[in-house]
Length: 190
Image (cartoon, rainbow, N blue to C red; front, side, top):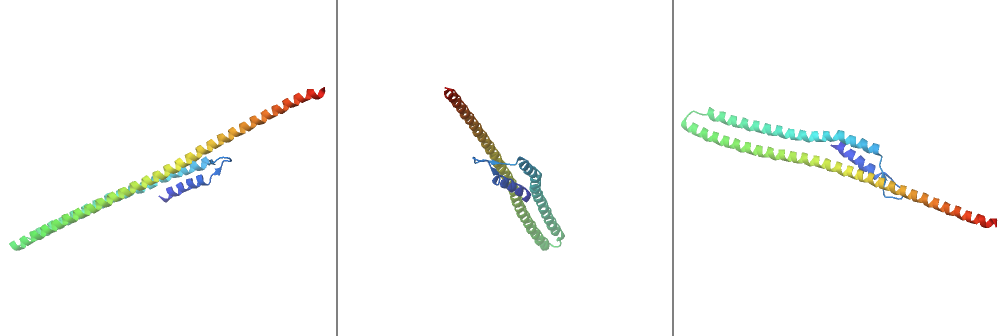
């Protein structure tokens, strides 16, 4: 989990600390370094997702344990009710007690199941939220990096255009000077 965040921070730092292209607001990104960080994310992201899967599996284990505990309580209640069968009053009391125990067991089972279900939903929600957060950060950083690369490309194209214009102007000026010198040369010969 922290490894994914660290890699995203590295990508962000790389973009923020990238060299600027002169005369533009563009930056240069080391594509080898970016590819390396993307590979790190590719390796670490499954680990983070596996952790989310572990949380879901823990939820299933908790539910199973709660069901077993509820069954155990019911079984003990039935055994208790069956063990008390002596006289009518005692049997009546035992039945009432057994009924109360079974009802209590059912209420406890219901409460445990509701609590377990709420915990399981919360764990699933947390796992989903974490996975979405990781994906959102990754998408944001990759998109930002992609925009930086596009801006750098546009800046380089602009610099190339400026250089080509300067060369053309220099050649035009040299041609005019040569033309002027040729015009002056016959005039000096007279």
